[in-house]
Image (cartoon, rainbow, N blue to C red; front, side, top):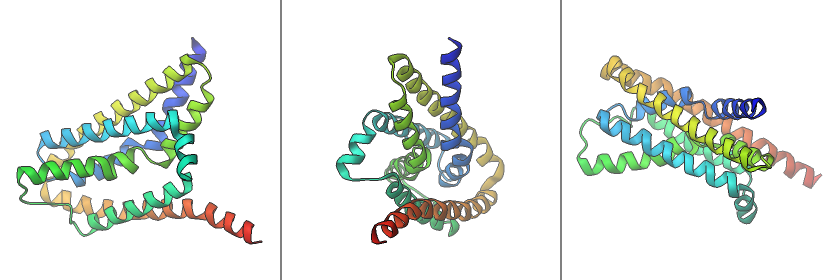
Length: 213
């Protein structure tokens, strides 16, 4: 029993570190600053649900999908970096803030940001996907697989609760504070994008050089 508890703690710690819900929260705040509390909750819920099922899908079939499409984790990091950079640039220019949005536009906006970039690749990024695949491969019993699935569910629940807490922070900062936060986080997201991009590019370049040499 103690062994399973230790395993669950290790699983949870690794996913929490890789997903970093506290780091996702400021980006979520800026992207949903002009939405109502109900729409922010819907956005958080959709993003977490999509991320959960994506992680579970990759955990069970990640190696098969990667091999079938010829995709590497490094390529995933490069694409994630590009997505992050575009989002960060828009945030830096304060383009994500909207003053008047009708109901249909709000629904489209919520659906869009729930999938990308919140669910993928912010919550369910290359690191979390790789971690899910590796841990599932190492879980050689049904009990360990159940613990892994329970851990993914728990980390998504924690992420959802953290995102919900951003509502109070948004109300506290006000319109001016949200704009300042958006620009600051836009700069940070662009830096993260560069790190993502080059962390994926370096191994690919090394492989190319080894082949040519």
